[in-house]
Length: 480
Ligand code: NDP
Ligand code: BG6
Image 1 (cartoon, helix red, strand yellow):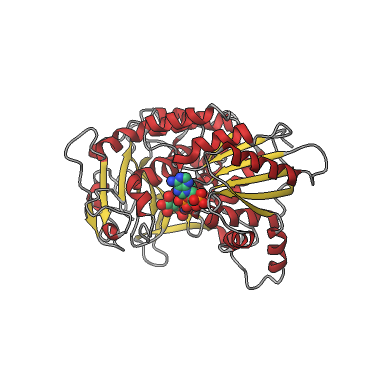
Image 2 (cartoon, rainbow, N blue to C red; image 1 turned 45 degrees about the vertical axis):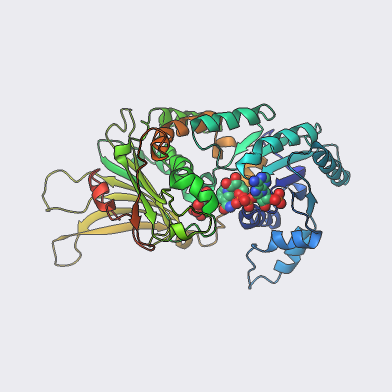
């Protein structure tokens, strides 16, 4: 067992316990890990936030989004066992005295432990404006000297390069890089975790992974819903800060990095950083922006907002492997489908022996319904001698029906317990990613040009801005 693995006597403190992220994603992940036996023995989960709520209300908030399977008669008992490890403390984020009270409360829970080891994991499920004061107060008042302390930090980390560096620096005054786990939940998704294996454990893929054969790579995150009450936050972010600079950029770096010399977090992240450093900042000419019709009706959104709810950005890499291959990162809200996928489009087969055939593709479907498939041209079956495209598909649910595929937050909380940094964002990685996107963000925000670009309107439920097909065609990419 790695020395950094936490297996017993642990308290998770969720700061921002009354919030949307905690309720929707963090508590259900804790429940899943708890009843599968993946949490240390014993574990306590303590919610901390300003809201004054009683124990029952907190229990209801924690359990309201836990899926309740109708076919599991043991579920009510599991839920009761889980409730027994939950409690809530109200307190402000800036008053050291409240954190000292929290510390005393944690010590009272720890007095039940056998042995002297005491581990504390602090989850900042808070708006980033509160990160630094909470990180400071936790370090000064709630840090244990009897075991391991870890700090989980949510996105967004900054809104551009400068603010990100400031935030990283401010937190690093209290928490070491080794103690800090910056979440990008896309790194916990099954197919994204599978990318290095697919690439480096198969010569059939690793040999076909460069500009000689690949025409373009499309990384797509489409959502069929709008901002749905998150307009206040979303309008200050826009789609590039919300999902492209982080989630899609992570997928990009795993797809394009060189082979790490060893499978450890340092070597893997070193390769990602080198790749990001070789990537050119996004050129405004290589960006398409859109805003869905109806976005301005979200109560949190100003009526004249120019925030993009859709963007396609082309990333170009200055290295031998990828020179000239466009990586098209695109995402939008209020589209015709919810789909996250990677699509690697190979160049057309040389010559035209069989006429103009669709190009071959390698497709990784991240969600829904994880799958990996290859599209090839085959002879039309039967007497016909024509050519038809066909798909060789590995559908995870069909291929591994009995395997539990954990959700991203389950994976990442477990990785924090294991002290595995490979699925978290290192400070230099964050910096390199912001360097790629900060110039285009400043351009879009009107800091480096006037007037601000106006995103094209698109219909709710459509495929995005009408110019999308033309935009993709300019990079030799087919719309799918
Ligand atoms: P919320 O707006 O729900 O905030 C969480 C809690 O923080 C609130 O319940 C509130 O608790 C407290 N809070 C709210 N506003 C402030 C403020 N201005 N200053 C101090 N405390 C405040 O946020 P989310 O739960 O949605 O998100 C938390 C973090 O996770 C954010 O960094 C977000 O970007 C990130 N995130 C969220 C996702 C989601 O789906 N919601 C997805 C991915 C990341 P109280 O008033 O009780 O103290
Ligand atoms: C979050 C964004 O980080 O990621 C949301 O803030 C987006 O706007 C979400 O919907 C997408 O995550 P997932 O796991 O639902 O694809």
